Length: 435
Image (cartoon, rainbow, N blue to C red; front, side, top):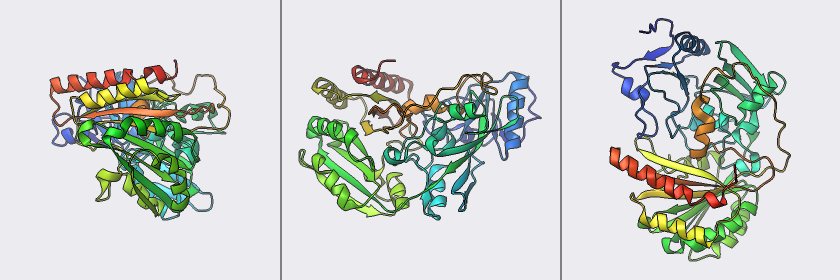
């Protein structure tokens, strides 16, 4: 029997009135029940939780925004260290640096930085936590022109396995810093704050093109031939819905004016019978539009799921265009899906022109203390639209994600849809990189 008297912060236990809400994650398919959930109010609370877990041999899980699609930020009969209350955002005009608490969500971060006309590259979903996003890489709608979220990272403050505060940067604990920039966390400690180099951002142009569903193969073939090599200021997404939706769509964001964007889109507009929407607006308004917080959210939102819904995603990289045989297979799955909320979303990912970074040698401080990644950045990355690691070898990559959602979390329904997701994912394997 464990005693929890050394835990600090707001601690929630099974049986407490707010336990159900405290353990609830974004994906309602996850039913994990921790023994305790610590909502840290300051780094000291994280230190206490780490020390307690170590002393009692209890498995910890680290949580920021609750968006781990497979529930890796929860642990059965373990302790969850939740940093969502560490959500401060501070920007220094003199240095251009933004210090952000590990529990801050993306939309409040973007809004705070927008007051200074700056931003950092990041994901589109407004409630994703900055920790899981950054530690997993952090792909978003500025990715092709400004890199991943972790590319703007300058310094990390974290609690290591011994319960001590550690700072990591290019000049201090540099190997640990390298590992934290897209390599996941948890194996190394619990991050409490990040410092990013922010950059100015002006108005952007956004577009949405819609076609009848019957044109899916022609549009997909044209998109995958066009998107990877187009202007790097544009991030483009193709949404291939199930047949019942009656349409498919492409949408994206361009760092520039809408006149230039219209010219870039010409190859895509030459396919089928497209309906185009084009708009130029302040960057923060584009963030809100793509984040689904506007009245027209169902049209512009680039992430399919909302909180309070069970779902299953699979995804992976594709290094070369999918041939006609693969497109026919994709169409088959979108025609025969057992649920109506299914989407295959390819997107053009970041391509770096520089050499891959040097790989340091372990060990890092506390590197073997925890079994899984902090906020599960590495494990979450393959299933999150906002946390896809990038290639730094100069190769073009496209990420393709299969998303299935259903209204009731019955055991049979969950098994059936998860099985469908796995089978559909296998269709992409011939065009994935070999491991």
